Each structure stands twice: as C-alpha cells, then as structure tokens.
Amino acid sequence: MLRAFSAQHTDPRRVLILVPNRWRDLEGHALVAYHLKNAYGHEVELCNEGDAQRKLMKLGPDGLVIDHLGIIERVELAMLAKRLGTKVFLLPTAGFFQDMEREARRAGKLFGASQLVDAYFAWGCSGRDYLQREKLLSERQLHTIGCVRFDLYSEPYTSLVRPKDVVLSSLGIKRNQSPLIVWTTNTYFANLGDPEQVVRAQALHAKRPIAELRAEIEDCITQFREHTKTVATLARRHPDWNFLIKIHPTEARQPYESLKKQAKNIYLVNRLSAREVLFHCDVLIQRGCTTATEAWMLGKPVIELSIGHYNDAIGPEYLAGNSVAHTLEDVENAIEGYVKGVVVPEKQRLAREAFIRDVYYKIDGKASARAAELIAHHLSPAYYSDLDQAHTRKAAREAFSCWLRNEDRRFGNLLKDLLGINREISIRVWKNWRRKKSDLNHFGLFAEDNNLTPELVQTLLLQYHKVLAAPVPSQTRSDPATV
Image (cartoon, rainbow, N blue to C red):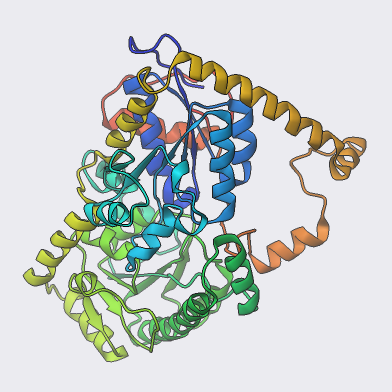
C-alpha cells in the first residue's frame, strides 16, 4: 500500500473501495482514494465486485465503500462488513434515476437494508430529500456531495484528456477533422437471450416487480431496434460524418458489430471512458442516459432519441436540456444544424443548469474531496476508536481463517491443488464457455474486463498528483489495485 501518515492518527485507518465498473467508476473512485491517503493518511485498497468479499475479510478495513444496496449480493457484503465492525459508506455510481423510487431501492428499501449504512453520499438535493421523506435514512446518515466521477469534468482534471487526434486514432478513425457524432447506448436488457431468464435473475437478485422488469426489457428491445436502424441510416446518408458508438459498460460489444458492416464510417468503442469520447464529439445522440448530462457539462449539443413507443416516460426537466427527436428526419435536421454551427439554445442551457443543481449538486471537481472528508470524519476517534479498530481486525482475521478452511475443503480447489492450477482460474469449462458466449455475469448483466491492476491504479494516482501539484508517491507494496 501507499502510506502517508498524518498527525491526526497514530495508526492509519483502512478503507476498502468497491469499483463496480472499471470503465465508468475507477477514475472517480481512485480520486477519492487519493484524497483519503494524501489528506488523512489512510490506507486505501480498490477492488472489483468479484473479489470484494475475500478482500473484506483479508484486509479487515475500518470502512467499506460500496455503490448501492439494490441487489442481494451487495446487501450480504454490507452485512458481513457490519459483523466485522466495519463502517459502510454508500457512494452511488450509476446514472440518475427518472423515478425517485429507484433512489430508494439504491438505499436498500426492497431488502430493508438501509440500517446497514453509516453514511450515504447523495449526488444531489432531490435524492437526499426523497430518502429523508421516505424515512429510509436519517439526516445524520445523509450527505450531499455531488458525483465523484463528474469531478473529471472540471479543472484541473480536464487537462488529462488526450488530444482529439490521439483518441480518434486509437479507435481507428483517420478522418479526425470530420464531424464526430457519438451514440451512447443504454439498452442493457436488449440482447441477453431469453427475457424470462433475465426477469427471473433480476427478481431474485434485486427483488424487482415482474411487470416492471418486463416493461423495461421491452423498452430496451425497442430502443436497440430503433436506434441501430437510425444510426445505420444516417451513416449511409452522410459518409462525411464519423459515427462512434460508445457501448454502455453493462452491454456486450457483439450485438453492435453488424452495424460496422453497414457503413464504413461507423466505429465502436467500449474500453474507454465516456468522458474522452464526449469531450471530442460534435453531437451526442442517446435516450435517457446519464451521458447526456455529462455532455451538458461540456456544453455539447445533445439529441434525445424518442423514436418508438416506450413504457417508461422521460422526465420533462431532463428533456428540456436536449433537442428531442421523434423521427429520423428530426435527428438528421438537428445534427445538420449543429454541425453547421447552430449553438445550444439559451432555454436548453438554463434547463441544464437547473437540472444539474438539483440532481448533481455541484460540478466543481470537489465531490471526491467531500467524500473523503466525510469518510475520514466517520472513522475519526470520536466515532470509531482504536478499540473499535482492534475489534474489527480480530473479527476479520477469524472470518478469513474460517473462509480459507472452507475453501480448502472444496472439491474444485482440491482438484486444482492436485493439478497445480491457480485457484483463481475456473476449471468449469461449460460455465466458462456459456458465460463467454452469453456475455452474462451473475447479475444477468455483461461486465467488460473489470479487472483492476496495480499499474492501472498507480497511473491514475500519478496523473492526479501531476495536476494537483502534489509530491509523487513511491510504491511501497505490491498488493493488487492498492493505494
């Protein structure tokens, strides 16, 4: 771990941060880790969801940062943390919700799990106020900080964006002077095979109502069908435009591969942060996606694709910040206007500012610092003593020893040991083949290469040190994805 001691603590606190999706969340979470270490002298480790339970028991952290309590696996992780004496901090990462009921589910409503939260870091006032009205969380538990991954849309972090020609060249786009039209997809339930299998998985893991799930799947299928048709047609009509499809972090790339065959000016990207793509685009097209509001932060034109019938309505406050298109011709005319120099209308700009204030609080580059300050506050001696820390360490050691004994008894591990195979490697060939073929993870959603490495994390930390003019740290330990 990178360690920095401050006068506030004789023994630094440990914090484990779960990074739900490497491509969406790592930048913001690493920035929280940076502030925890440099401002408060804490030890911080980042992990992906597949390794969270083991890391929780092995590390025995004083604080655990997770993204939500809306699925049973997250609830079980939080319950384990509380048994160890670890404080639980809920730091949302996924996009804003049109329906505030979803905010309540993120706080653990369907599992009655809100009591597991020591501190909930709401993005904005609307979410915080709703949770308080619903009496899911108390005023003491609720804190409004903004969204940590949106810090990268403010100075000094915007200087980290690579030049346009470098980004486009890395994607195989040679005509970097042509208009760049970006479509950010948002149809995670459209291509997962049997819809009823998805319904059963989501009902089991997230306790979501069956009718709601079926309606959402239907909307995803409609959206995928209509939007792919729209993009393919526009690309053929306008060979002088570049169309870049930024695939949602929970979607597979394969369903979009056929689009590339329909026009030479269509390109795909999934292993890249949306921020770099949006920074260099001329126009963004999408439906009900958080990337629209991220594009607002950069002053970009955004077109809302309302082609087709949908069960889930989009809120008027959000729609007011976009140019709404109901037909292919609407989309084409809007893009042509923006490409020729039409600016975002003043009415849209004002609607965007109002929405951001209400839903995201502030886009000032300081949400991660606010999160770190609150975590450090809850782990300070007044709220979490050295005796509490000793208890947590002891409980974690006992839990980890028990877990290791159980792992040693498993037939699969015994077989791997006999064959000299690393236990981290799955030997269930059928399961591996099926998972690769279907691109599903155990929540029923695709996760693209979510592994974290020390090099990946260290690169981000060095970038943050550079722009924040802080001393460059030295790596003193080689634990994976460790700060």
